[in-house]
Amino acid sequence: MSDRLDPNLIEPPYPLQTHLGIEMSAWSDGAATVELPLQPFLGNRQGLPHGGVHATLLDTAMGYAGCYTGDPDRKQNALTLSLTVNYVGQARGTRLIAHGHKTGGGAKTYFAEGRIVDDMGTLVATATGVFRYRSMG
Image 1 (cartoon, rainbow, N blue to C red):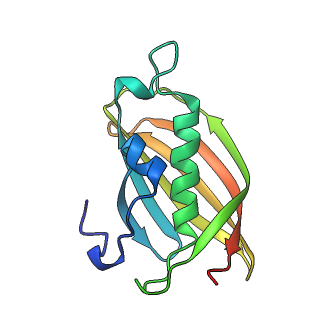
Image 2 (cartoon, one colour; image 1 turned 90 degrees about the vertical axis):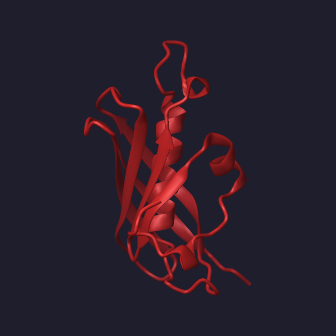
């Protein structure tokens, strides 16, 4: 974790996040970063990180980016309505880093963009998404 993440705002990881080993490293208004150490079980038939892993990281980063409240007692969730992933490079490092940021929206939906780089700075994937806020009541 980094100093960019207020420890009072860290939510417990959701089950898939725990299973895969996804770590949140930054979260602020309109932005989030999650990271994943690459492990053999994340690979596809070619031994490369599976495309679904990239999509999951991007969905997670962009989802958190739109749900920051700054108040640990006021949690916000969202559902993904649309996710488009562009695979643009091959990871060469040992860790995938997904950055998501909110680009617009309104009271019920928001738009976000994301990108994944590896720990060597290689651009691996980009994404756009549309998300719908969930009522918490």
